Amino acid sequence: MLALVPAALAVLATSVFAQASFKCPTKNGYYPDKEQCDLYYECRHGVPKQKLCDDGMAFIWAHNPLYAKCDVITNVDCSDRPYLQQAKTSLHCPRANGYYRHEKWPQTCDEFYQCDKGKVKVLKCQPGLAFDPITSGCQWAAKVEGCEHLADKLPKPPGHAEPQYEDDYEDEPQQPPKTPPKPAQVQPQQVRRPQ
Image (cartoon, rainbow, N blue to C red):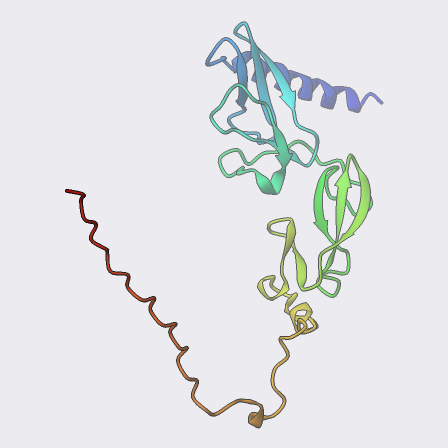
């Protein structure tokens, strides 16, 4: 128990220091932390209050301080703010929120896990699609590395079957469509004026 006290004090000191060093650009608004992607500040009357997105989510900064929005990490560009809070893992969920590949991936490319506050749900992509761990969504199986085998299993759509024999093709050239006859031109009638 005593071992946890120094760690908790270090986290608290870092948080207080970060909050104290952040200066609100405007009196009111939401602003990203410069280093941590899931950390942001709510400014009210020029006073910053540190906020943290749920684990697995990151703060979206669209250069609009009126809105505070967190989204799954794969939907947010964190290249300039690479740090994240410590992960809260659970079975099949590397983070408490987000979409993650199935444990049997790539053999089971069409299934994936949706994690919501640490609770897991198994979801399935539509036929012909595979879970892409880079985008955290379903993509065409042929475009997901390691999942091309799903694309080969797709049934042909009705009416789009390939011909079985070469003779199934017509060799006769197609005739151009006949153009409809032009309508008869009506000559304008001259109207006589009464004299």
